[in-house]
Amino acid sequence: MIEYGLLASVDERDVVHVQSLLTQLSKNAPVHSLKSLREVMRSHMIFVARDTRDAHHPIIGMATLVIIRQLVGVRGRVEDVVVDEAYRRHGVARMLMQNLHRQAIMGGVPLLALSVRAENDAAGELYRSLGYNKGHLEIYTIDLSKS
Ligand SMILES: CC(C)(COP(=O)(O)OP(=O)(O)OC[C@H]1O[C@@H](n2cnc3c(N)ncnc32)[C@H](O)[C@@H]1OP(=O)(O)O)[C@@H](O)C(=O)NCCC(=O)NCCS
Image 1 (tube, rainbow, N blue to C red):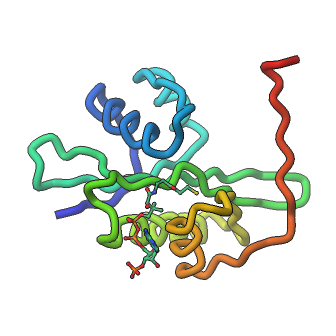
Image 2 (image 1 turned 30 degrees about the horizontal axis):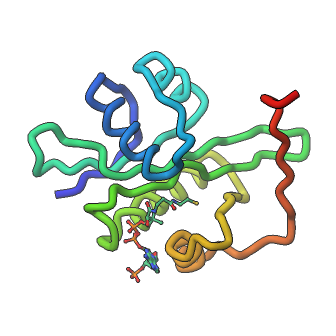
């Protein structure tokens, strides 16, 4: 059975699971320690799916909500949406996102935004099927490590 919930406390095993998911999300994912993961958890709500059929209840999927209180109002960002390869196409990401949406509504977030690479068909389909519309904003980035 897959259980869904907000990541409230973590141990070393959770760090390994989160790291494995991050590697599937990005080749440049930073390496986390228990301390750095706990630091992220202070400002980010990390929704996780756990496989309770496995004795260790591994985290097999996650999605992160960041609520930002800006001068222009409250905004929500969705980040780090990823499901372990072995568990894909079983509705795990959809459930994670629906839980995240409920939390955002409870937190008074009127609008959620996320970024997705144009060639990421699976993610694009997922978000469209959940009701997300493509916006017209362009994303600008700068690599400050080269400054
Ligand atoms: C994108 C991702 C999170 C989807 O996770 P998932 O648990 O397999 O998705 P779900 O089973 O909940 O699928 C929900 C819907 O998304 C769409 N979808 C998911 N995977 C898809 C795929 N490979 N091709 C086309 N549509 C897909 C479908 O509309 C699907 O509904 P359906 O199964 O009823 O057709 C997963 O493929 C993943 O982790 N990819 C690598 C990381 C990544 O790209 N993250 C997104 C960063 S923006």
